[in-house]
Image (cartoon, rainbow, N blue to C red):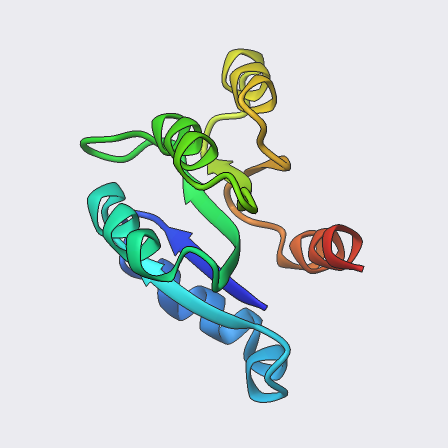
Length: 125
C-alpha cells in the first residue's frame, strides 16, 4: 500500500518512518513524502495509480489541504484516491468541509498512530 503524506513540517517523515517501522520492513506499507502541495500534485501527475491513500495537513502555505482534497477528487477519478486530512485544529467547519468534499477521515495532531493503523485496516480490508 503506497501512501502519500503531505505536510510542510519536514520532521513528519521521521515520525511516520518510526511509527510504521515494522509495517515498512514487512513491505505492508510504503510512504512517499511531499512537503508542499505543489510537489504532491507533481508526484500524483506521474504516480496517481500507485498511491491509494493521501494523508495531508490542512494548514500549509500555498494550497491548503482542503484545496488539495478538492483538486485530487476532481482530477484523479478512476480511481479517486482516498484522502485523510490532518490538522492541529479540530473545528467543525474544517471537518464538515472535508467530509463534504469526499475525505475518508479527519485526524487531529498529534496523530494517534495506533488509531491511524486501525483506520488503515478498516479502509483497506
